[in-house]
Amino acid sequence: MITRSRFLQVLAGGAGALALAGCGDQKAADAGDESKKDAAAEPVAVRAAVLKGPTAMGLVKFMSEVDAGNLKDEDYSFRIVASADEVAPLISKSEVDIAAVPANLASVLYNKTSGAVRVIAVNTLGVLYICELGDTVSTVADLRGKTIFSAGKGATPEYALEYVLRANGLDPTTDVTIEWKSEHAECVAALAQDATAIAMLPQPFVTTAQAKNDQIRVALDLNQEWAAACEAEGRDGKLITGVAVVRSEFADAHPEAVDAFLGHYRESVEFVNANTDEAAALVGGYEIVPEAVAKKALPACNITFVDGADMKEQLGGYLEVLADQNADAVGGKLPGDDFYYGA
Image (tube, rainbow, N blue to C red):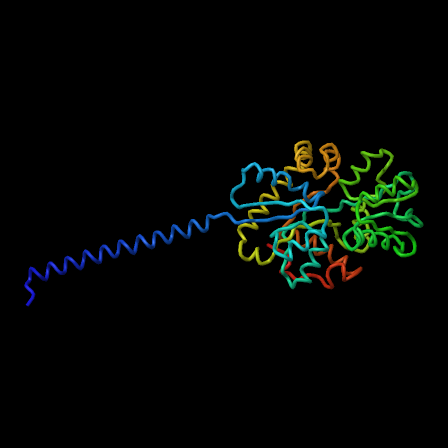
């Protein structure tokens, strides 16, 4: 038989064991919470690819802050590439998470990958200009019978030019001759070799060409001509050259990292548009174009930042115009609502 004193000893021992077990459980729970907090605080690797031109120019402040070690909320890295052809494989192979691409290519990638990419921002409006050495072109109608040199077949330059020509009563296949080149530098060279030639160039390459030959003049602004053509058709459309896209898988896994990227992106664009001299120095430092060229070109590069519902409205209208011309320009059909991140 257990005596009363022995019973109390056992009871006290059990209570102590329970207390120790409770402390152990609490410590384990606290350790688990701390582990979760550490995991949540771990920066996400965000890999971005940008095109050498206005899209990269709009990001220079962001990139410089990363390189200076001033942004540590996420682990950002950037690579600057020369052409859009280099970007698509990087996206498809998951070698980058965010990329700047031509606006229509974003739609094409969305359709080809069954929604594996989404657009997160419009970053560049119209940057295309018709240039010549003489003084023969003042309206789109003046292009009749001319030879136009341009790079960008199958992308915004081709579709924008064809839309503007048709809107002004010109057939791109019979009323003008369009010579497609692989690089903008070839178009500038064509101008130098033929005084009667016309070239369609984007900024900052217009300014680069003018720095080499001050006789080159801007005859037409395709941004204005596009807007006029849309207005004549009762559309409220803007010419959109570039956008930023994200891999859908990455966006689903790390929405906070995407939102952080967008916040820094907006700040960078605002800085670049408000501080031309400082931005030009950064552009030169990243060897996008020389600083002197950037200083002249930046005001004409139409660098912007539009996201959310406004992005969907503007980009959707632009893609609709392209699809009406040629469905292949957008990948066969207009993208679904899930294409527009945050809209």
